[in-house]
Length: 353
Image 1 (cartoon, one colour):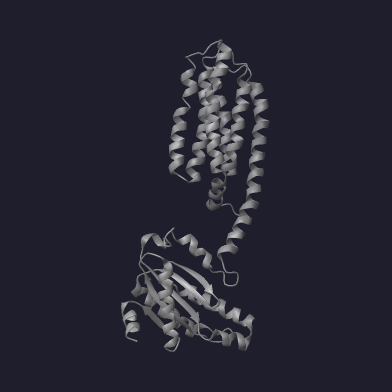
Image 2 (cartoon, rainbow, N blue to C red; image 1 turned 135 degrees about the vertical axis):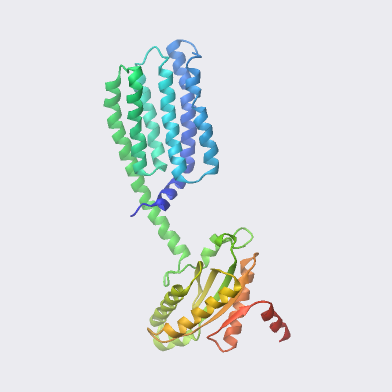
């Protein structure tokens, strides 16, 4: 499976809360190193306190950004920045410690943090960001001269390999979960025969007031159409041939849609199009579709469609669907194979009747 931005964002969202709590726990643990300093000095040494508490600065930045930004490309590097900040705060404190014998133990403990950050991160990123810890140690050794440097490397390199293996296994495990989730979503929001969205997709396009929130506030029109005399097609050629006709109609309509849209199989041979367009352009678009169906169908038999069109001006989307349905009914009553617009004139005509 190709791992793209959508996959890694999904993986990040899955582990997002855990990632935040790991950052919190790691920073709190770093602050508790003051206790180890107390053990080494026999008292709280104010010289190491700034080094131990400096982690609060990147921690505060992380919490602010994490509350506002949801993009893994921002939060994941920031999480690793926290881990490396803990490393450098520890290195800073080591400058004042009389005994660096336990530095290798602290190094391994800090490396363990990187395992958990790897859950939310892309695998390659985890390998790179975790590997940079050896650069931290190499630079720090220039002025600290770790007595246990060799032991740190002997323990650290296999541990780093283990981290990479765990991260790879976790990402591979999430692939299976992601694929299963996508298949479930596909079946929940798509019609199996035509591949179009089904009615369930509407829930993702509206707010709590059932107002459509697609197309970023641009004008929206609603088109409702169905295939004229489709029952005759099924009765004459059989249901399998009817399915072929349905797919053919969908392909032709999709090929002639000129504006951003959501096209849904509304039920049976009835289809709904939510179009980013004003009513005038939507009417022209509907007529173009109608003509295309009339001219281009013929795999099984030639068919025509009737279309009802209305504008959407906010509020419950069901009202616009009902208006389009009334216009569609009028198109059928007027002889089929035509487009009818629901507007103020249409309403006036109904009142007169």
